[in-house]
Image (cartoon, rainbow, N blue to C red; front, side, top):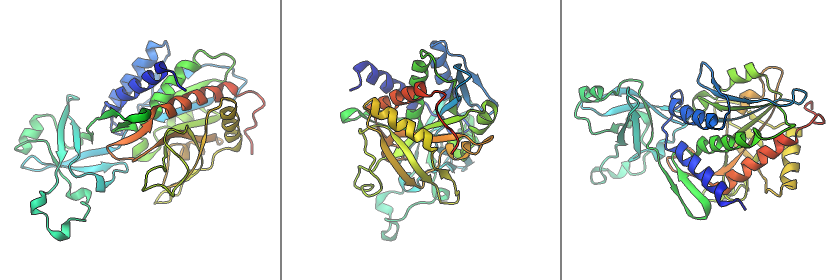
Length: 367
């Protein structure tokens, strides 16, 4: 069982991260927080043109190098029009589910980086006609009410075309070390590899590890590519959510359960417009499974369609990279209230550190 100190650290780090609004392409505040945390632990960082945050932990050059990464952006909206009466129209950024949007609290980031609160309008029940009750509003029909009386007032408050919008930051603890938040995807992954970086920095006789917090994953899944092309790692380990199947609506989809440990993906495929996915490198799968068994960490196995991560493109970079998706079970993906388990995050962090420390010259990366 994780110690109370470990639970409190991951919980507080995740809470801090979730309460920061950071739309794809607008990750500055998230990056600043992570950068500060790394520097407080004497870890040097750099940022590239796109905004990826990179921290290299030098190791044995004779061993294959690793990139361990998670995305720090979140999905949301971008302002595309302000009506003359002050209502704000938006375009989706990422896979935002329209059916879960009406009445949601949101925040708009103005030109002074202040958060302006708003709510997505929902037609009054008393005026809703029978034929409307089961309809899902299209994004073109959705508007944000921030209380403005006019377009001029919105502009005066620093909101304009292109202003980023996200779900209102939210975080709370549930029973059994479960937590609920507005951007668990993938701030939980960021919390995990931030903790892993601190542990790996103390390790000896390990490979070089490039810790990366990437941008624009929710937009086009390619923000990490310039980093990979520059660093040229031999192994890529991507940390993100795995779809939990322990709710009534997901019961037949897989055997991944919240609170039962971290996961590895054995197969992912998007299949909706983007014909891409990941079949992980067998040597890396074998390594994760062996280490998990030796460390007595329950490692869940995931196979899922409709999933696409940065790793899908990373694996084809340079001469090809031995790639694997690992992660934590999560419920209610891409909604404003995602749920994960703190114990799963701690076990995932411990597994990542143990796996990386186990890599030696014997590992075979050719198939």
